[in-house]
Length: 124
Image (cartoon, rainbow, N blue to C red; front, side):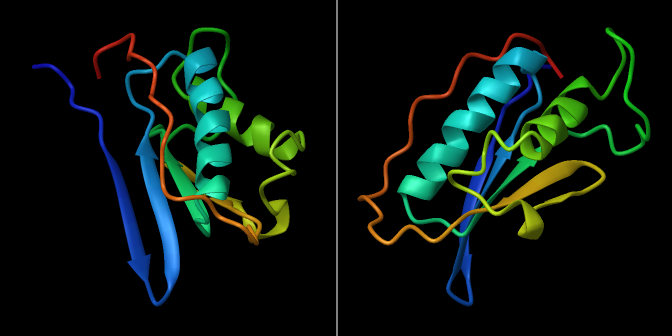
């Protein structure tokens, strides 16, 4: 069965959030996609973006080939400060199966548009 990726946007109590599924990406592509989506979400005036990576039961950083590569790469991306231009690390948090990135307030959001996502390289 072929895996169908998904994303979801919502606005609850005035809070705009987007959720992106990273299943099917290799680690490098997932990180590049996350960078692009954080920028897009900030430009579009979103309050947060959540990246679903799975691997909820992976508690420690895996070796070069283990499960949980994307989980730990996303956490490193956030902790390294590479998202600081668009997000507030203090209000962002890693969850067991996802990473929620709290975005800074954009005083001039653009009309909503999203960059094209990359092709997925693996089936789930």
